[in-house]
Amino acid sequence: MLAGNSIGKEFVVTTFGESHGRVVGVVVDGCPAGLALSEKDFQEELDRRIPAEPKIVSARVEKDTAKILSGVFNGFTTGAPIALTVENKETDSSDYEAIKDLPRPGHSDYSARVKFGGFNDYRGGGRFSGRVTVALIMAGTIAKKLLSKFDVDVLAYTSAIGQVRADQKFSADEIRKNRYESSTRCPNLVCGKQMEEAIVNAKKEGDSLGGVIECLTIGMPAGMGEPLFDSLDADLAKAIFAVPAVKGVEFGAGFAAAELTGSENNDEFLMEEGRVATSTENAGGILGGLSNGMPIMIRVAIKPTPSIAKKQKTVNLVSMQDASLSVKGRHDPSVVPKAVPAIEAVVAVTLADHLIRSGFIPRVLKEH
Image 1 (cartoon, rainbow, N blue to C red):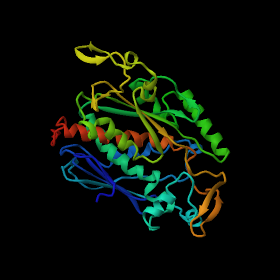
Image 2: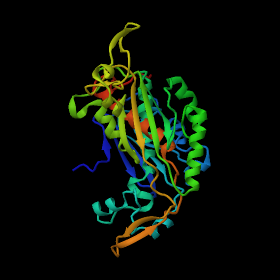
Image 3: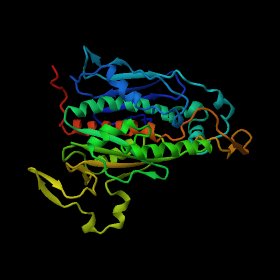
Image 4: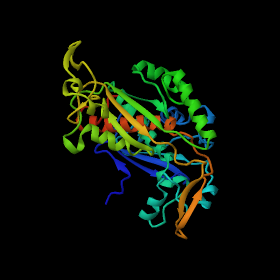
């Protein structure tokens, strides 16, 4: 029986590691041979996890450095499984010992304890921590580099934090230029500052905020995806829900489509510079589970960080009596900024898998 730690059919990603364990790692199997790859390729992506503004992030700041253990020879992928690890160095488990029998509201503590009979690593959320997204980002680094060879670009950014929203459509160039200039990863730098202030204010109250991440993919060819259970949007949604704190996913108009008429929601076809296009993008680039050649737009809802300083009700799992706790330790007042590169990574991984499955990406690249 598979344990749920792998995803993909041809570009297969298996992650391992816990928040306070020795390492977090990933094995990527099925990457074509001939892709130029080095440890330097991973550093920029890993660095993007941590916003520069210390007021909006956890005090736990890991100096993540990826180590390639296999699958790369003479600077190119070999076609063999690629194994990568990042060490956990800045761990402090003391706060978790005191509350190991008090499940934190909003966390998987109770469910994991029941499922694994109490043998699960509860420190920092263990396997269920946002820390494991480091593995996803490493896999996404490979996928994004592979996609770039075929002019497919995946761009995630923050569109809302709490009640602060950037209600505008950003061009790909605006996203590339501005999103990482903002600690909150918002391409509108003024709005990004307002988001930052909202996070700081929530932190002062001992609370946290969630938000919305949008992910735009351009260059995806039409016809990618498989019928029904392996449809492109189904596989994308599954991968996105693997990122901790994700509570909702929509494509294109999403839930707003429920309020439209068919004539309003349908994207009419037209010819544009010699290619088939649509006049609107309500479908979000996917029809019938297949890409239609238009930009793929995904919107992701991220819940507020459940670890908060405010006192909350819980239960003591040893005495089986009501209790309360205030979560101490180092926690992000909003995980949205850190989740941006993780969402981008899982989308890239899924698209790479489908492009390889379709034969659009060959098994051997002509890099030499």
